[in-house]
Image 1 (cartoon, rainbow, N blue to C red):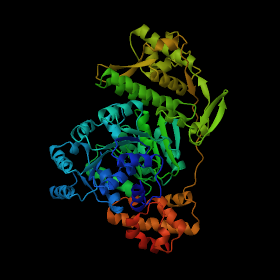
Image 2: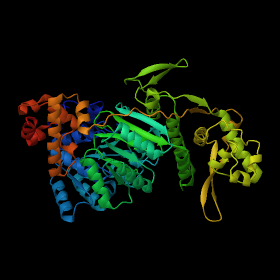
Image 3: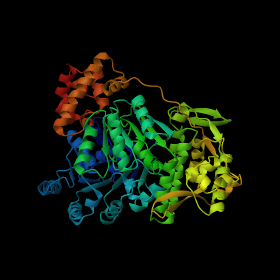
Image 4: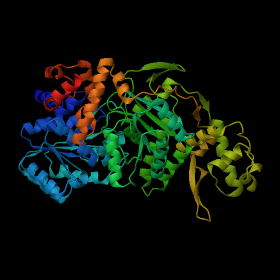
Length: 635
C-alpha cells in the first residue's frame, strides 16, 4: 500500500484516501474481485485507477475499463494524460488508422488503461485482442463502470452489459471491479448474479450526499415554479433540468432562454453534432443550464453543477438519486428540486401497465414508483427516507439532530424542505372514501368509467355540461366533497394510485381518441371500509426568500472563504485555466478543480515548493503548470 499511497500523491495529487477507498484499492491490488457502491463524487474512479497503475508496475499488465459513454471516455482519458498516465480509448470517434495505432500500443504494453464500450468489448476483434494479452500474462484488471446497467431491476438497464459475463468465463483469473453510484438491494443482487461476482468483496459507502438540499413541491405551473426556483436560488449557476419528453425539453429550454437564462436542450432526437456541441458547452463553460431527458447525464463529471431540477417525476428512487447526484460533486452546497403531480403518477403507472414486460417485472416497477411517491408525499425528513430506501440508517456516523414528534424521536437532517419548514398534515381518509364511492356509483349508474376531472366535479357538486348530460347530479355522492379543494382531491388520488386502491383503464372513443379513466381495484375495499387511513401533507405556497444575484466566480470564492486579494488570484487562475482547457480541448475541471485553484489562491505561492501538498497537484501537473500558476498568482 505504500506504493498505492505514492501513486495517489505523486500522480493524482491527493494526500490520503477517502472513506473505503483504501480498503478497496488494497483488495483489488491483491487480485480480489470487488463490487463498489459509492455515491457520485465519492471517488469511484480512483478505486480502479490507482490499482491499474500499481498492478502494471508489479508486472501484471493492462487494465480494461468498460465505460458506457464516448464523452466520458474522452474526458477520463484526457484527465489521465494530464496526470501523466498512459491511457487510451477505442470507440467510433477513431478512424481505422488511429484505432490500429491504439491496438499496436496495447500489444507493446505501452498503455496502462484502455477504455471501451461494452458492445465493443464483446466483438470478435476485441476478444482476440484480449486473448493475446491474456496469453502473454498482460491482462491485469477489468473495471466495469456504471455496473447498475447490467440489471433489469435498475433504472438504466442496457442489454449490452449482459454480454460482460464473458469476462469471468473467458478470463477467470483476471480480477474484476464493478462500480456504481446507485443500486438498491434487488439491483445489487442482480449485479452480483449477472456478473458472477458471488465471491467478490462488497464495499458499500454511505449514500448520504450531505451537501445536497432536497426540495419536492406539488406541481401547479411547473414552468413558472422552475423559473422562480432558478431566479431566486441559482441565478447564473450551472444546472440540469430533467423532463419526460423531447417536446417538453425543447419548449422549456426556449422558455428559459427567453427569460435570460443560458439554457440548452439535449435529447436523443437531436442531431449527434448538436448534442455533442451542447454537452461540450455545458462541460466547458460556466453557468449553463442543460434542459434534458435522461439521455443526458451518465458519466458527467462536471463538479460545479449547483442544482438538478425535475419538472416531471422520475420512474423510481434509483433514477432520482442518480440524477440528483450530478449536483455538487465538488462538495460545495447544491440543490435537488422536483415538482410532481397527479398526472405524473398516472403517466408512470400507465407506462408500467402497458409495457410488454412480464407481470413480475411490472410489480417490481410499481413498487419502486410507489416508493418514490412516498418520498414525494412524505412529511418527515426526506434524507432519512432516501437513505432508508438503500438500507442505510441516517444518523449513524452522520451529522443530524433528533426531534420529538408525538413522543417519537425522529432524525432530522436540517437540510431538506421538510426539516427546514415542516409541513402541516391532514387526514384524507374521508375524502378518499367519497372519491371511491363516486367512482363506484358512476359506473353502477351508466356502466361507464370516467377520468379524474369528471369524478372530482361530481364530488364537488359542479353541474357541468358533462355531469348534466349523464345525469350524474342525481348521484348520492354529488356535492358530498364540496368542502375539499381540487388540489386536495388530486393529492388523495395520488395516494390512492400509489397504494393501488384506484386503477387506470384506457378508453378509446369512436373517433380514435384514447384517455385514462378511473376504476376500482381489489385494494379499494380496505379504504372504503375504513381499514386503511390516508394521511396527506398540506400544500404550501410559501416561496423561498429571494437571493441576491451574484456571479458564479464570486460564489465559489465566497464558499472557499477567500479574502479580497485571494479572490482576485482565484478569478485570474480561473481565467488562465479556461484558456489552457480550451487549448487542450478538455473541460476546465480536468486541468484543476475549483477547490485546487482556491487553495492556490489562499496560499499565494512564491515558489514551486509552495505548491507541494495542495490537493489535486500531482508531479506531472506541477511540472506542466507550476511556473504558469506562479506567474498568474503573482498578477
